[in-house]
Structure formats: C-alpha cells, structure tokens
Length: 446
Image (cartoon, rainbow, N blue to C red; front, side, top):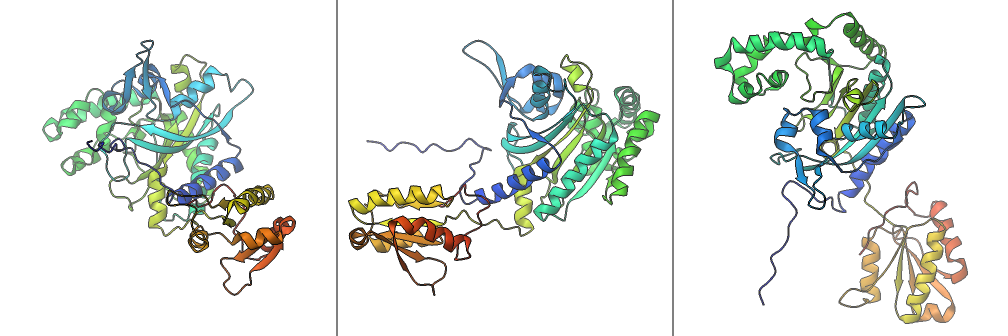
C-alpha cells in the first residue's frame, strides 16, 4: 500500500503554533485593553463579502482588485464572492446596513485574517492578520489625532521604541484632480524615465507612482508636484488641526508629501507608522480619513477615519525589541495511577478549576498511562506550580500528595481530598508558588 502524500498548508498562509501563541496573546490583550480605554467597541464582520463591495470601495484599477483578491463564483447560486483583502469596507458596510450611527458616531475595532494573493516574503503573506479601528460619524481633526495617539500608546505599552510616524494630507477629490493633471503632465514630460509599472499606472492611478522604490525614478518623483500645494483653506485647516493636537502632546512626526493611498476612498489625513527593523516591509500601521466611503455605498454622507496594523509585522518587531511573553503555564498537574485514582483525579481537577485555577489532568498516550516517573516529567514540563498525586496509598488514606514543582526546597504535603482546593488556593494566592492569575485561558497540554 503506497504512503499517502502529506498535505501542507497553502503557500503564504501560515499556522500559528502553540509556542507562538503567548506573543500573539500579549499583543492582542494589550491592543484590546487600549482600544477599550479609548471607548472603542468590538465589531466582527464576515470573512466573505460580495466582490462588488471591494471593487466599489477600493477602486477597480488598484493592484488589490486587479491582481490580488481571492475572488470566486459561488457554485451554489452564482454569487460573486471575495475573501476580504482589508477590513474597512466590511465594517463600513455593516455600519450602513445596520444603521449603527442613527444615535450618534461610533468608535469600533476589529481583528482577523485578511487575504491577498501576493508573492510571499518576510512580513507579507497571502493570509495575514490585522487589528484595526474605525471611527464613523466624526468630522473634525481631533479624532484623527486621537487615533494616532492611541497607536503611540500601543507602541509604548509593547516596548516598541524604533517606530516613527509619517503624516500627510491628500485633500479632497477636487484638489486631487487638479494635482493629478499636473502630476500626469510632469511624468509624461519625462516618460523615458518611467519604468513599466509606472507607465501602466500613469493614467489609471498616478498617485501610486509616488510610492515607487525604483532608485532610477527617485529624482523624478522628488521633483513631482506636491499635493499639499494644491490644498485649499478647508483641507489645510483640517491638517493643521491634526498637527496642532499632535504638537501639543509631543507626538513626533514627519510630514511626508509622498505618502499617498492606492485605495480610492481615502481623503485628507493619511498616516503611517514605520520602522527600519523589518526590511522592505517597514510599515506596521497605516490609516487615514475616508469621508466619501459611506456615500459611495449608497448611504447618507458620513465622515470616517480608521487604521489597520499588521499583527505579524508587529510580532516580529516585538521579538526584535526583546519583548518576552510568558509561556502558557498551568497551576496544577494531576498525576494518577490506577482506575480508582483516575476517577478521583477527575473529581479533584473539576473542583480545582471551580476555584479559578488552571489544571492539566494527565491522559494516556498510545504507549499507555505512564509511570509515576514519566508523569512527573510531564508535570515539570507543563510549567505547573504544583503536582497533585494520587496512587494506591493516597486512595486508601483519602488524601492527595501535593508537591511544589517550582520551589525545590518546599516539602510535599499530604492533604485530605476535601481540603485540596483550599490548600492549593492558599498556597498559590498566598505567594506559595503559583502563576499570575490575570488570565486562566491557557495551560501547556501533553
């Protein structure tokens, strides 16, 4: 009989393994706590949306829609569907569909996987995770500044100090249209300097040419007309309002006239948090204002601003900064030998969990239940503070042996079954060797 071929993950779509989970949890818990402290509420939208949602929102001539979206026809009913390439369009669709701003503006946050068919490389994957926020119904520069300051707090709490802020305003549609005409004329006058990608974008999305990394085009791009010079009084006042708040709160930033957006719905404030620690994929968070978007979806004109950050890139940056997350550990490991002891171990484990402690109960492997010695090795490897041991002697006496696993100088105790829970709680919460009980969601299982 031939051996079955091993099935591997889809290229560019990665597993998050248990060893990596603590760092992800550290980021997610930090981010969620900060968003809550600013008054943001969680929203969850489907991974699948109608393809037209993204074509309308992102723009039909953007790279995302043209080359990167995972789109397909539903064989059951013929619907055109797409795995979401970004989070904003789905959130705004939900805001409009459920009339969430009928009673006033909303601050929202989300997290989850996004999908783009790109060439996988460091910091860029075909399935990637984003954490984002959207503030819908707020028109002033104050909310733009709040979002930027929220991000700064997140970097501080995560220990990321080599991150810098770049800021720009891309004005409104009329201002961009005037700038676009002069920008195209500038590039057409230097057509021989443009590479193939720039020529392709020249009449469809010329702003993105300013993003080029081609060294041969840098002088040409630096000499291009600057969108900031085309802004009129209202757009300039909004931008100055953002800068005034940031300056007053000592938020360091650089105005980058080349910072633009390839997605059509952005206007006015755009910003990015970037680092030099991740090579070419140096942007860890990007955001901006999208006042036209809800009206593009058929709703009443409603302003909005948001950001999204790539979780994989931030995790990598946290590791580079030396950030350490405690491995998943449990408080108690149940060791048992014999049928009666196994039954009692289940009873005690449930009682201990009722008291709020984390418990791993030893279970059999294909090799069997294991000796006391092998089970104690598992208990030690689990990170447990205590092992609760049940054997023939313990069952005969109605007691459990409670052994400290982290304090080798501490004595093992014989504790009656009915007192085991109180004994462990007292030992752990009273400083007898337990772990931090801020979160009991994980233990290391064997």
